[in-house]
Amino acid sequence: DAYLGAIDHANGTLNAYVAVTPDKARAMAKASDEKIGKGEAGALEGIPLGIKDLFSTEGVHTQAASHILDGFEPRYESTVTANLWADGAVMLGKLNMDEFAMGSSNETSYYGPVKNPWRKAGSNADMVPGGSSGGSAAAVAAHLCAGATATDTGGSIRQPAALTGTVGIKPTYGRCSRWGIVAFASSLDQAGPIARDVRDSAILLKSMASSDAKDTTSVDREVPDYEAAVGRSVRGLKIGIPKEYRMDGMPEEIETLWQQGIAWLKDAGAEIVDVSLPHTKYALPAYYIVAPAEASSNLARYDGVRYGLRVPGGNIAEMYENTRAAGFGREVKRRIMIGTYVLSAGYYDAYYLQAQKVRTLIKRDFETVYADGVDALLTPATPSAAFGIGDQDMAADPVKMYLNDIFTVTVNMAGLPGIAVPAGLSAAGLPLGLQLIGRPFDEETLFAAGA
Ligand code: GLN
Figure 1 (cartoon, helix red, strand yellow):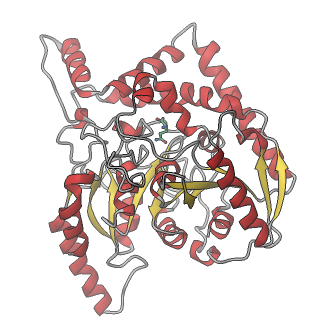
Figure 2 (cartoon, rainbow, N blue to C red):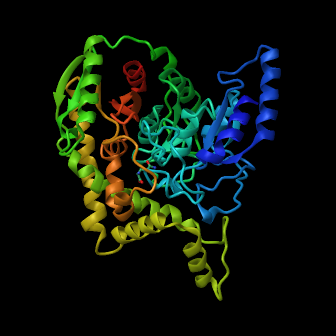
Figure 3 (cartoon, rainbow, N blue to C red):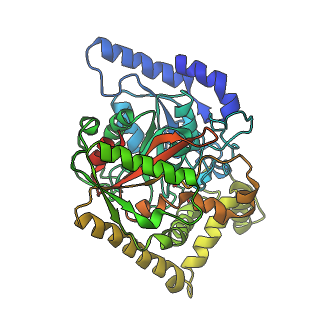
């Protein structure tokens, strides 16, 4: 009731939820009370969560914040959310996001932008919460849920967590099942939690992760007790500082934050080493070939026949065109066009194949560093603090918006785990985050060092 009241009070301003499910929440909470009464409480019994609109929830609004999925209510439940409910969690509703998870500011949503609960000191201007999981991050930051699900294809868990002072972890590719999550770029997409602190994120990930016969890329590997890693000493850990992440024109306060993080880990007994990831500069351009290519294929299913919106036409081809013209937003159309182009005969070798080769080189950069005994890497999470909603520079040039993911996309390209933790405030009083990147399936080191 407290959370539903808070949503009632604040969601009109923040626009974090696109659907609230009070009846379901109360029924689930009642069932939790009964279980607790019988001494049968699950790991998340009675914990109220928000769910990103990208996760299929049976009989409940699921539109990936797109008009093209108008009125879609799946008849099935995503594996990740099913895992959460099986552990006793309570669903409060569905959270706003960039349309089909394409964006870094939550401004591409069909439902309009989410507002960051944080503002610059002494200013009334509304700031973005980051994206694509902007609703998840804003809801957690504003106490409109105890934790939230999110997804990360190029930074969509870690970047919004950093811009809202929350904790976000993208686990290793394959750690969470993608079954029932609306697909953006299947070889990059991973689910993870956004939470108020590292311990909460460890507890949530433990429930979300599983191997699943319905997703052949999910791994058959025991899920460790992540919470036990929180508070574990970092003494003796070797933390790498990749020099390529020191970008030209990086604001002074980001460099200062990074140095502060290095000092904290050093004081706690970690060994700091300089490392090189030479192909870092190619990560963003390669990502913006691979991700749109996969998206153009995944989004071909939204044709007006099988799901959601249908805009009639004189014949079937016209119906497809009318539906897609009306149903997809600008950014989604841009991605589909880029993706179709780079996959087309004559361009496939020049773009898509090259990008896949670059991806392998990026992955090898990390493998080399880890083979040298490095346990994790420390980098800034974002190149700046939150920017204003409607920022003219970014609106005019989509590539400027893409640069927000400069520190996060490499991790998806290599399939590695990455966590963003709050680490300080900008000069204007906005949250800033640091990122830790781990070895494959070593989320525990990220929880230990992140805490
Ligand atoms: N901002 C990146 C993009 O728009 C990443 C989004 C994501 O991780 N889902 O593609």
